[in-house]
Length: 131
Image (cartoon, rainbow, N blue to C red):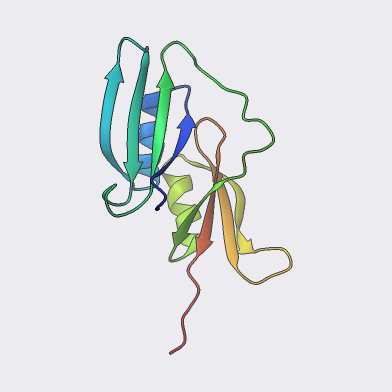
C-alpha cells in the first residue's frame, strides 16, 4: 500500500489553484470537470502522482465555503528555511498565521499558513544532518 492523496473541498477553485501552485510552488497535475455530478477535481503536488502523494482539490459547483470542523489538523510541507518560506509566501499574498520559530517543547522550526479556505499548512524546516 501507499498513500495516494489527501482531498480538500474548496469554495473557489481558481483561488485555491493559485495558492497551491503560485504561492506554494506545486504543479497542477490534472484537472477534470464532471458535469453530471456538478463537481471538478484538480490534483496538485510537487511530483508525479505515480511517485508521491498529492492533494486533490474538490470543487462542488455552487458551493462557496465549508465548515472545517474540529477533526482536521493540517498538511505538513518540508522546507529548507521556514523563515524565508514565510517571507516568500507573505510577499506572494499568502497568509502566515504562525511565524517561523521553534515549536513549543522542542527545537524543530515550524510555521503555519492558511490556504484560501482556511486549511492549515505547516511548514517544517529541514533539520541539518551531521555526517
